[in-house]
Length: 226
Image 1 (spheres, one colour):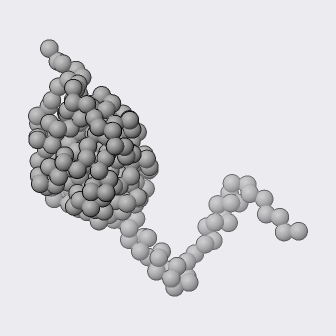
Image 2 (image 1 turned 90 degrees about the horizontal axis):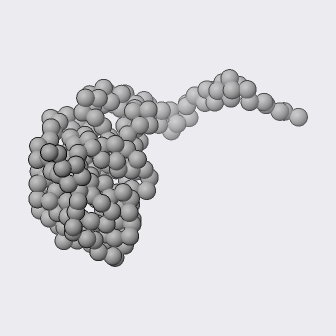
Image 3 (image 1 turned 90 degrees about the vertical axis):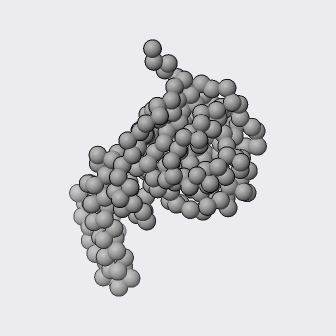
């Protein structure tokens, strides 16, 4: 019998590392635009440390305020994995802090996203590990369960599946389904090239702004010249 709510799936399908690596350095904003603004996590999830995030999702779900399953996830996750923790956005207790995140550093994880609170902020800021969280509190967590590992989770108002490609920078985080990744990558690279060309036109004083008035007129904007 399936023990829904308290179970661990030990295997996930990770995308080809070569495919994941192609997203390194691409701005999350451009990826999100190429996905019709879908897949972007809430702005309340902010980068705590100073390094960007990239890797396949290793998902964790727990009741609010409990980090038992996060301890297990740190044991199970492979180098490069991004632990995505669904803590229901609860900020009353810190799900993780310096000791647990040092484990993530030693295991060479790709990053940690906590839809909840963290503590030991000063230390976490300096770690060579991408960390995102919704808040900070000194209050410690419980370790009772229940919870689930490697199931779909809702983090930052986005449903994330195990193995989704997670990209994060200072602006925020985007989740990409592997089946869509090649097409999204192609669109993002084209957008990137277009932005480079536009920046050159801006700096050269040749940027075309005629589209602004066309859009205003098409939407019925009234121009008053008296």
